[in-house]
Structure formats: structure tokens, C-alpha cells
Image (cartoon, rainbow, N blue to C red; front, side):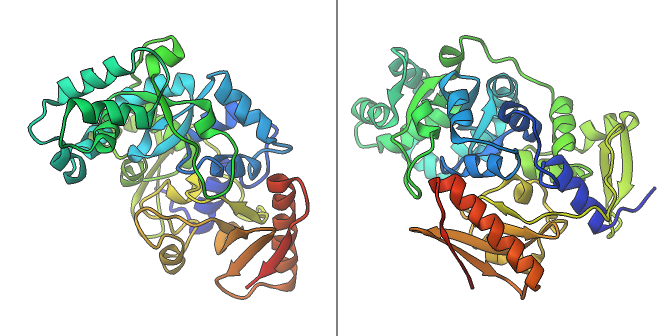
Length: 360
């Protein structure tokens, strides 16, 4: 069984994530390749697509949200993602056990103790039957029906247990650090089609196309699903098998190509919560353990980063009219210029004008 170096794994990830070279594919095609795009904060998916697509504009993604071709909802690991509508219809039912597990956590359980879960969901869907409804209005009405309970938490539980999608304004480009008021609609109403569950094998194939080669634990960490070993074992004959530098078995699609490890990797600025950093349990192919602690200081935070030679080399932030770059180790003069130039290009995308760049 061939052993793959960290460099080979790095270049394979960058290539499949469209980070080795920007692509001319459409935003819908890129979102489909990535399976789902992390969208905890509405602006970050725009930056993620800008980093991957040549000539990408804000209007391209906004149009996909408005025409219901792309939707925003809870999906992988119970967090907010953008997904192609057809993918959402197939993946949300498959991932529902993960969202149900979150809904059974103490945070939700304390508030809904004594309530029948099925009745709570049915009531929530009945309140949403009229169409798109502000989440705060759903919370208010649930609180009226269940005195003494926090309506916001009840509304959150309904959103986890039933496939609801957010209105386009929720995912639209907006002010940094703010979120539009969320409105929700039952997915089948919004899309005009029923849910159509994919198989776990389908999900594994889609994952490998975007993140492979990888191990079973990587698929589990990315999806939130557990006990996938038997399913992957059943797929053994259709997959290619490798080992990583530590001897762990990796799987990949049989027809997936591995790029030359000497392929140059350009500087890239990645948004917070970027897919490339969250797709594996062992993320050392793109970020060191030391830097991971800096970039992911808590469960709910993944800072924006920049890549040099394919690996995380620092973080960045926007402060008014300034892009602030924080390098985790010294940069060569050539790399420093490349990072600053890419930050300038980001400024043009973000504010349609030039931003100052400061390197710490």
C-alpha cells in the first residue's frame, strides 16, 4: 500500500478545493464540489468563493440564493451551511440524526423537558405553514403556547429537528460582524419538492471528491455521522487505498488523480470557518497542531487565515479600511509581497476599492 507524504496530501486537498489554481467553474458547480460551504456568518462564503473562482462577484452568489438554487440551513455538524438545493434535499435527511443529537443536548433538553418532541415539531411547522416567517416571530408564538419556556430555544430545536431554510436576505452580502434577521421556511415549501435522501455511500464519494485521500475518521469528523467503518469497508473494492506518513489507512476514489507534489501553491486568503481547514480530524496536511490552537481558540471559532506554500502561515482580519495580517513565523521577502498583494485584491472584492494592508 503506497504511503503518501504530507506534501502530496496537501496538494491533493488544495487541488480538489480549487485552492491550487482558481477555477472558471460556476459558483454553483464549486459549491457542489465542496458539498456544502460553511456559512455561520453570511459574508464568509463570498470570500471563500472569491478565493476559489476566477472573476467571482457578490451578485453571482446572491442570485443563486434569490432564485432558490442554493439554500442556507443547518447541515453538516449541525452548523449553518450553503448547499445546492438538490444536494440539500438529498443530504439533510441523511444528516438528520446529527442534528437530532444536537437537539437532545442539555441546552435544548432543559428547556423542552416534559414536551413531546413530535408535537413540538408539528406545532412549529403549523406556525410556519403560512410561509416565510421571522425566526423571532416563531419564537414568540412558541413561547405563548408554552409559558415559562424560552421561545428562542424552542424555535432553535424546531429548526434542528425539521428541515427549514433561511430566507435569501439571511445569506446575502452585508456588513461585517453583523447578521441579518433570520427568517425560516419549511424546505419542501421553499423548494417545491420533497426531501429525497441520499445514501451514506453517496456522501462518502462526495466527501472524497472534495477532501480525499482521507480516513474513515476524517469523513466522520466532517459529517458528524458515526460508525461509518462498516459502510466504507463495504465500498472497499471501488476505492483506492493508501497510508499516511503515520501508517493510517486512507481511502480515495479510484479515478481521482493526485497532483505532482512539486506543484507550486499560491498565496490564498481563506475566510473564517473555511472548508479546507475543517474537512479532516487530522488537519496537519494544511495546518500544524501549534497553529491550529491559534486559529481555532474555541469550539465556536475558526479565524480567517492565509496560506503560504499551501499551509496556514498566519491569520488576517478587517479593521475599517485596513486588512491586518498576523504572520505566525517570519516570511521571506517574496512571500511577504505575495501575501500583501493578495490582501489588496481581497480589498477590491470586499469594498470595491483599495484597502491598507498592515503586517504584524
